[in-house]
Image 1 (cartoon, rainbow, N blue to C red):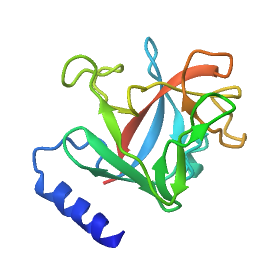
Image 2: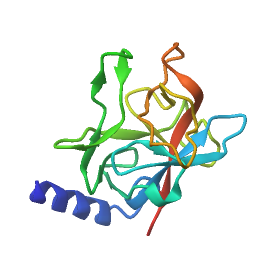
Image 3: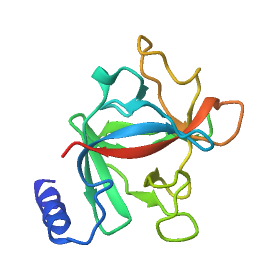
Image 4: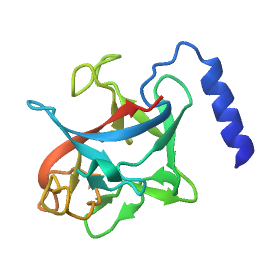
Length: 167
């Protein structure tokens, strides 16, 4: 595991032309989708949605190329395990092995559902939701998020995940 991490750091450091989004240390910010892309909080180290800034997690993103990357937090790697109850995938951190995420580019390079922001994508999905009311109040427990599918399991407003660099 340490050798893989070292190689990813070296590749990222040598790739001077890569975009700054989704690389290094940062937060995953939850943004409302258009027409009103306001900041609606962040994800915790476990990958749950909170509006309590004190609970925002610190993510490390390792860019493989200009689009693909993986994420980890102090609790472990981030991935998308299957969530049978909702027939979709959860966003979760603290796993032994992570998965590859990508920037959402739309139909043209640089295109995003939120102009001026690179958005996290998993396979073809870039919109996320919860099974509870959202956004959570700062005093609420952080909420699990899953791929938005437009079903009755999706409560509240669909969100996108954007990067905020901590470097």
